[in-house]
Amino acid sequence: MPSDVIESQADRRPEPMSESIETAEKAIGDLDSLNRALLESLPASMPWQRQLRAGLVGADARSEVLRLVIALGKSEKEIAAAGGDILAAMRVANAQLASGRADVNTKAAVLFALNLTHRIVDGLSSGRA
Image (cartoon, rainbow, N blue to C red; front, side):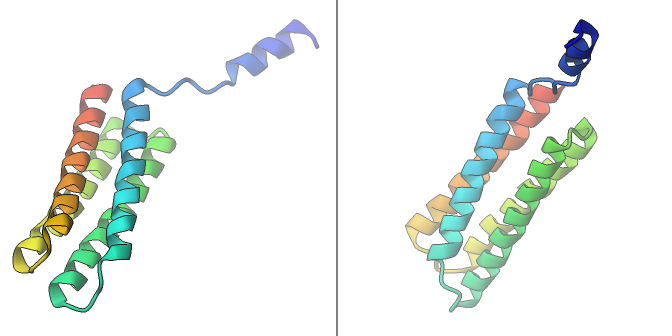
């Protein structure tokens, strides 16, 4: 192969992701796993359980949007907006627990998911600035 062809192929390599983006993507995966586990274990028999499930489904959808925004290399503003959306969804899910009789483990898991979401959003905002 001519050297100019090799150089042009090397120019097409994607830039490596920053460490904060990689860390955020791992944390988003952890958050997805936690949300899925909560959704599988939470019955939908009581009204507060249905509301909590709806909040968790909303957070799951928003985490997928955040993942796509990051993967597509969108602007800092769009990443921050997607991060704000998932944080708002997790706050709603956490608020659903106040109106119900959730067990200690469910409350702890949702609170852990909310704290993980805070870390994701904080990591993205500090890593991109």
